[in-house]
Image (tube, rainbow, N blue to C red; front, side, top):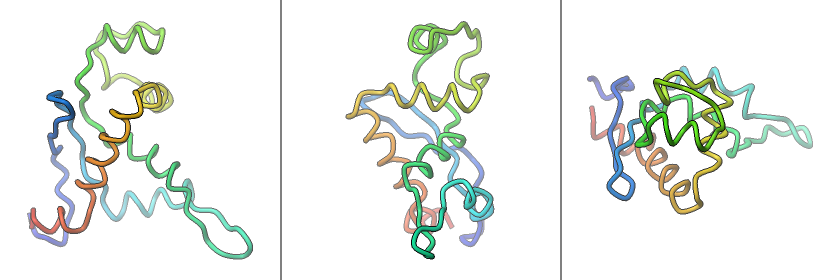
Length: 122
């Protein structure tokens, strides 16, 4: 893929030996999300980075937990796991991760979305 474009293939990574996958955020996606994580305060634009992190959950394509764990954590019944959860269910599931796993997840997502990482793929 040309270095000026985002590869839309999922990037696999591990946290404590468990495999996850994530599709890097494209410029167009982030532009679409501006109204969801930007706000005006004192006549100046501000970013809500916590909200941006939660928006990035949309790009997590696979998690190392099957339907049984998801059902237990969310108190729902799903047979196909992560792909069939709606956005609120995915957010709720990620919010329930312990701090160490949550921090490691966002560290990997930030690494994957970083300009230097994207440049390597070009």
